[in-house]
Image 1 (cartoon, rainbow, N blue to C red):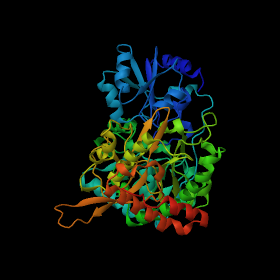
Image 2 (image 1 turned 120 degrees about the vertical axis):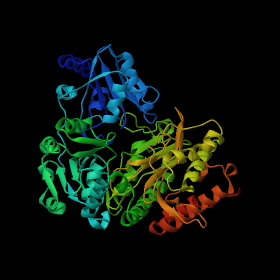
Image 3 (image 1 turned 30 degrees about the horizontal axis):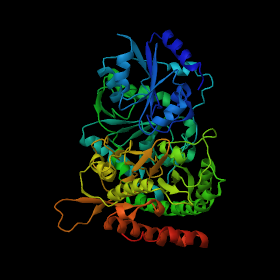
Image 4 (image 1 turned 45 degrees about the horizontal axis):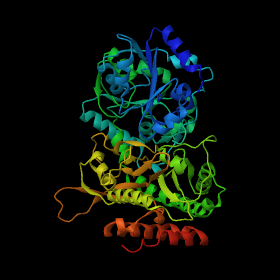
Length: 591
């Protein structure tokens, strides 16, 4: 962050006749992972978390994030320049309305905010003004260039269904809804629909662009021509037309009189505004690719199993390495994360990490989405908690796993073991849940918190998120959270199961596996039920558990899970690693 950035922005706002400006942490696709050219919030404030925004007014400014990043926000931003606020407890529109001058003109970039989000500022009584040119871009002297990685085919052996089949299914949805076309702004939807992948953003294989899919299944792709080599153009086929992104506005204008579906929560408001100005009817509805993409087909489900098994070999090798290295006093958060990455690089089909590894020792583990840097890196100490949350991208699946490990050699304190055990109980409650079809993520979230709630504890993040198939590690539309949208969980979805507990300045606990939703075979069931298949295969640290707190059913589940890990992963390990895994997966012990 440059200390001159905020004053320079205020000068630019005056030049544009604005009294304030909204700075989301988003690009024009409103996604979590953005290219360097769109990291406006980080450049302005210094905050590098994946969720947040800033509101800059002439006399004051604030930067907001959620519970995952509040500690990181405090560390990365200057309190002399910014109020640091929790975006749920102190919503930005309410704060802006309280601090903006009466009748003040608050600017926003219509390509960086959704219609739904903009509505919250309007509802707060603010006068919102769309800007044609983002004022931050005018003052960012060394702004990186836009990414230009090529889009490449995603083979049918991994995709499971052809693009033609997918486009036909989506077109049928549009016809049934009496809609003529749908705007697609989510790169994950475009990647899934057209069976392509790319390399435009870190950790997620996106090829950035936009698309229109019509009710006859014809699809228009708007992507820089340089990103589409001949092989990819041939892969797309004649039913997919390709145009430069500069042609997007004229294409929307041609939809005058048509009914066009736009995701009010997931697409930039620019699209709805352009369509309405052109005389089209905007139908506000979710991206039609979201649910079909989330419900993995049999090929994708099997790919996820195989990717997780290969990934498990790397994770178990790392945990064996850590069992020796952690007590040496010579390893750090960075070296541990690099060691895990090294083991993954030896795995067949590894394409990269699915997000930057969260490698937090001791008090750093309490920073929910801690990202180690050269400045924050510290050694792994003895007799403390180490949290490692990491994932990988493979062509056949995406992984995400968190383990909390005791470095030893001494015994963990009883209070810590109590907390870890309660988190483990919540993890098991989700893993073993059986529930009727139609249940949403908000219904299940409480299962994971029950053991913590019983002693007055909680955690400030959701219990689970969707995961893509060689796509985003954070995928909608379903999540396990009190704030989850009312979307039903369905067979084929992959969700994380990651309850936790965090004691600031002391330690963090999180235990995460990925789960595949499957139909449940319940004799006598009066309606369809669902259950979870656990995909992730790696031991939990038994030293951190108190069996006396657990029920017999919970111990049975954990012992069976560990037996499965040993049975499936053990044969792929070396002798020393296999011996360690056998000990790590031994039955929990007396009840």
